[in-house]
Length: 383
Image (cartoon, rainbow, N blue to C red):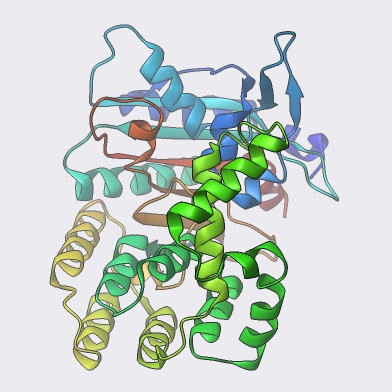
């Protein structure tokens, strides 16, 4: 999307959206464009890591142009002397991600809410705020897609699977093709055999069945010989752990057909907001899973959203929907233009309850936020 398209947006409407955010208690912030690269390499996921604009400072520290606002806003909060919770912020500015066919500078508006303990109400407030912001741009006709990684995690925990496989499947949530391939491999599909042959190559094959302590020592020694003290912010011990996980995955986990069947059935679930809870309850009954706690939280959120004037039938729940950023941990949402062939959402957001702690907070901080893609919004307004 070209800069000219973005400039087609009425600046007064951008200002109006920012005023809307401020009226709801969000303080404007403008985090630095240059950010420490290791934070994003560790926390954003493969999709963003491979699209970073990387550079380095005169002191040799690896830096990147900010690829999103959520992490910089959280870092800004933590850097403020005497910062208290709850806290809410908003922003307006560019993020930078390499894109093969378009400019890598992407204008965004957004809002973040940190520290609210009433999570269902906070989820509903941020979703409703994003809808009102789109209304301000004249884009009231849209589709709202929702998902919930908490439900997927609860399904995983109910299954008799090795820990390494639970971790692997959860890491892949939101990347449907790769997740389905991994589940197929658990069930022993032909495609799985191809993947298995690829993964078993070389070093991983040598690690299979090795005593974990000995394998850790081998990997750490090899890295030491090569003069490598860290890769992507990971220590030699962490790298060794990842090698061992990959070796365990390479050896396969056959005999989990029932788990694969359960996961496949779950990930295929789709329903509007009015029927989603019933569909999930029917699924849990069919497979004899105890999902009462995450289901209660799911229904509480839907009730809070409806109380803010968004009819449940307007929502579309997809069990396989997760955002492709590692720090998202629960409720997620996207808003798409209803009558547009435009690729990608106008708004993307969700809950990231672990992120602020990973960035250095001394306590758990529930958090949720969203970003608005102004280039897509401009294209939708112009269409």
